[in-house]
Structures are given as C-alpha cells and as structure tokens.
Image: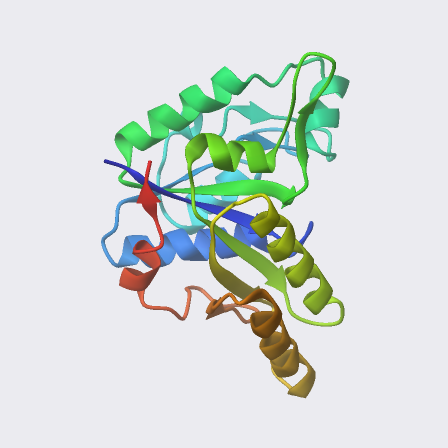
Length: 224
C-alpha cells in the first residue's frame, strides 16, 4: 500500500518546492522509493520547466512526466484563474486519477500544494474546491513549510490554526532560509509554542539535503 504526505506553505515563494525536492532526495538517498505529485502548476510552459520538473531533477526521481502533474498552465496566477484564462476546466476526477496512477507505482508519494493553504484550485458555478479539499480527498497528513524572519510567526501560526480548524492533520513544520541569530531563533520558539507543532527540519540557503533522520521522515507518510 502506498503512503502519502502533503506539503503546504505559509504563502507563495517560501521555498516549498525547494524543500519538497530536498525531502524526496533525502528519502531516496536512504533507499525509499519516493515520488512526487501536484494537482496543478501555474506559470510554466511545460512540466519540465515548472515545479514538478525541478523536483524530478533535483531529487533524481526520473518519474515520468505524465505522473507528476495533470494540469500545467502558462499564466503565473492561482490555478482557478489560470484555468479560466486558458479555457481548461480542472476536474476532480482527473486529479484523482492522476493520484491513483502515481500511488500505484510508488510506495511513498509527496504531494506539493500551490501557494498557501487557502489557494483556490477551481472556482466556478459548477464546482469550487481548494487545496484543503485535495488533502481530504487523498486522506493525507501535512507539513507546513515557511521562511523564518519578520512576519513568520504570524504566517506559521495562522496557517497552522486554519488547518487545524479544518481538521487537517499537521505533522510538523519545516523552517526554510534559516540564517541564525536571536530573532530567528526566538521566532522558531514562538512558532512552536503557539502552534504546538514540532520543527522537523531547519533548512539553510544552499542545503542539498534535509538535516533530519530519513527514517523519521518516512514515518510521517501515511497509507492512502
């Protein structure tokens, strides 16, 4: 039975894709056959040029492109708007079918969200769903990724509280772009105290793997 884990961010451009790549790379180096999936990518002319292609190369998965992501849009906006601009309807069934295909082939699948947790995937008169719906469809535990600095307490705490209010299981936090110093260390302490969530890894600029036990990382994934 395949296992999955969902990676969300405290917002856009917090290094969620970079951290996702490091997570999968760390697992694969420990001989876990881990793969990647994302429902929709915006702002990419092709799969290879987008987040999925970056993770596929960086983590050295060599996953077929048709398994990585079902929807790719050239407009660099939220998937719900990009799909309208490009005349493509995002269907729940297509997302679920892609998920079934990748989980049938790989025992560990990491799902990356789009932007922050409150990101609309489809919003029209026929159907409306957001990232939180995808998490519930797949029955996945989650990790929150965010940068550490001014404003990070607010971003992490609000994201965690929103997810908890929606009954989305959050396993912990990954801190990105850590430089050290009293402010960043205090931010981490405040974030863990106010969310009640553990820090699973701290990532510095240029890191090529996660500073965490790969077996403990693998234990975060749950059966789907």
